[in-house]
Amino acid sequence: MSGRKLFVGGNWKMNLTVAEAHALTRAVASGLAGRGQVEVAVFPSFVHLAEVGSVLHKVPGNIVKLGAQDFYTQANGAFTGEVSLAQLKDLGVQVVLAGHSERRHVLGESDGLVNAKVRAALAAGLEVILCVGEKLEQREAGMTDQINVAQTVYGLAGVGRTQMAKITIAYEPVWAIGTGKNATPQDAQQAHVAIRRALAALYDETVAAATRIQYGGSMKGSNARELIAQKDVDGGLIGGPRSRPRSSWPL
Ligand code: PGA
Image 1 (cartoon, protein in one colour):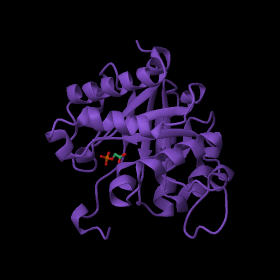
Image 2 (image 1 turned 180 degrees about the vertical axis):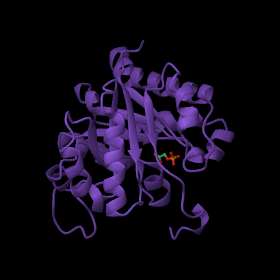
Image 3 (image 1 turned 45 degrees about the vertical axis):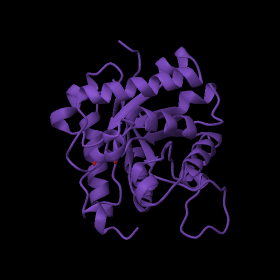
Image 4 (image 1 turned 135 degrees about the vertical axis):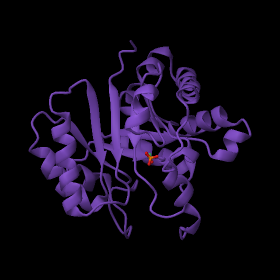
């Protein structure tokens, strides 16, 4: 037993109506009643945070954390279209994603911005899930560990040892996200070990052993059990299908 509590996140991306988000929140909360052995967070779209938060607020025991998919690093000001950490906290958000591959590769976020977001969220007292993962061509070129370690090291630059208690890493191979193709449990385990070694090198063995590393990328009911059975897989970050082929996206 690793002693790390399993952590499962639901990344709802740019999906659902208010009514659907409300219904899904209720379904998640009622499905989890009495299952305290797993930590759960949901990441609705910004426009549904208040509604989802109001449903979660009524659920006894704070069993599902409210999460946000993104945020801006600045406290306030003239940043049209952006959302601040203070605004998210005001709605009850406890945990945020940073470095999700759709933000890195579709919206063009750099390692520098991802790191600035990680540090801003920690400074605001929030928990962070830092997402890392290789593209297909990087995997085929044998660069999987190199990419994951680099994204981990860049993402955590300036993050102190004690702040690591608020960090979860999500290993999400880009080629597996929303494609129906998941990493094999063995491939996931290998990638997680490489990330955990990087944490040991950056901090120490204690931090490395305590930090949770989720797997994400087409995790579903039929494969979750064997992925999570791997020694270094501490839960999952679960999204949903793509609505359109990525090649037709505007950016
Ligand atoms: P997926 O997405 O489960 O649809 O592959 C995971 C994620 O993007 O976090």
